Length: 199
Image (cartoon, rainbow, N blue to C red; front, side, top):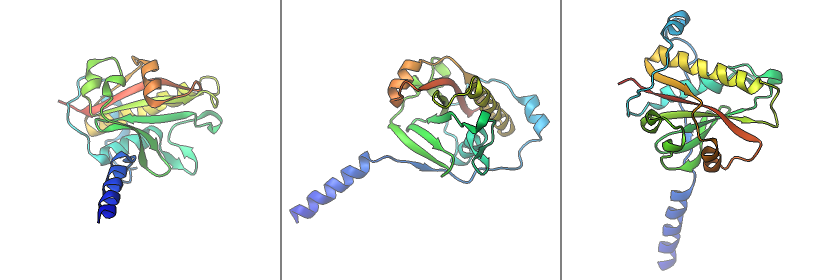
């Protein structure tokens, strides 16, 4: 009986420290506002509400940023198809890496680390912060910046279509993020993006 109790406690503890990945709903790949309406309404809104986004909305945003729309081809351009970007997602519950192939968020760090995701106050309360990280070993000139700019604009357009607040940012403590994510010297944060509901 004691052995069974010990095993139960150990198993429960093991589950509590295991990574809690998030399986995302299938992203919406059609519909929304007409393209020119979304472009017309695109703007930076730096005052998001401190309310969570639903998983469907998050899945749609992630797919638009860095998902696949063809076999092994991203929705954004990638010179020589190097796919040198990684997309990290900072939520209240933890920090995750977006795995577009499996449509999952892979937990990397537990807990609320929004204060590391940027230097602006609105970053700390927003429900979602994206961090775009480049693998410099794959980099081709300014390719990563082209991919990142296109990804950020896609997120802006989806946000405009869904009536969300959105702002892209370069104000990031790169050393703090690198330490949090345990990035090596070949990986660098190049931009962040904050998304949330409008107040």
